[in-house]
Image (cartoon, rainbow, N blue to C red; front, side, top):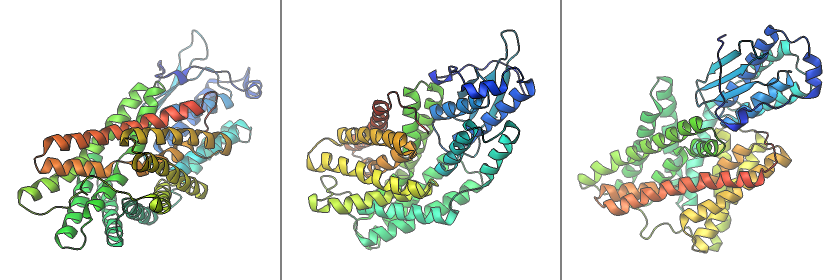
Length: 446
């Protein structure tokens, strides 16, 4: 174990008093071995949270609560996207003890996050002694995913299909989008197992979805092939990472925020590049490519609203399944997605509010809704947030921009890509503002 100072990156690193019962338990006999064991247990729990997609602030708060519950006061905690640091100084003249843990193999799993929070509840209740805490965490981590890989592939396929229903695609588009998403998911898993970087996998994913849609269009199978591309792009856009980056920045974790945001921007750029890699040569060779609807999307009148809400809810329930959410999380995701898309649709299509403003307003409501569910029902806030904004991901607008650029129409192409970026920013900022508004004085569980 290395010994050096670690400085907190955000305000949550400040020490808070530990629970009185645990202090009485450890006061006067906390040895150096005890401190080392507590730091090891807390860092292991923090690693599991970061690997599962928890935000920096939530990871710091939970990790510090574990150290305090085990009787260790004044522990400094700091995180970046790929590392977690814990440090404790037992006295003003003593050398600090520091635990460093590198985060590898990250994959979003709300089930694993809830396992760690169940462990925290048991530690705070005194049901987990220090000697067996690390073994308990290892057992929780070894439980494996809640759903097998093939289930996730089916969920991604259904997600893409229901997204085309939101865009008013027909049954042929639905089936084609499901098949395209399933192929892309299996290819991504195959490439990931062979160490291919995320950037290159995103380029190939965007290109594969566009190529399959273009092939169906040229074969005369469907005239709505552009919706297949839009659905495929939308489900691959890193909305969770982007929203988490903005939230980390607002909460003071600038290093982590910069890393998350840059990672999300890089994946988005890769998807755009993949779409352009197919569209541009196809246009230059004189081939017909899937066109967007003239004048933009028409999602129907009030009579279409029930179908829209049901499709948006299914998109988000499938997304929650892909993120290893439990049964209660699937129901929560369905409701959150229907709520967010319904608000956005009414504001944008029926009240003529600009797309970016409609997205921001809808995401503010989702942020408030997520924090209230977290506070009063104990449901995972991040899952509610991601589900609520997922249907608003601007995949169709990105395709529209790349189509214009491929035809040499630079001004409308850049304008469309810019609109997609502003919608993404509006979603992230709106959600964060909503959570902060509802969370004043409220301590989130996740």
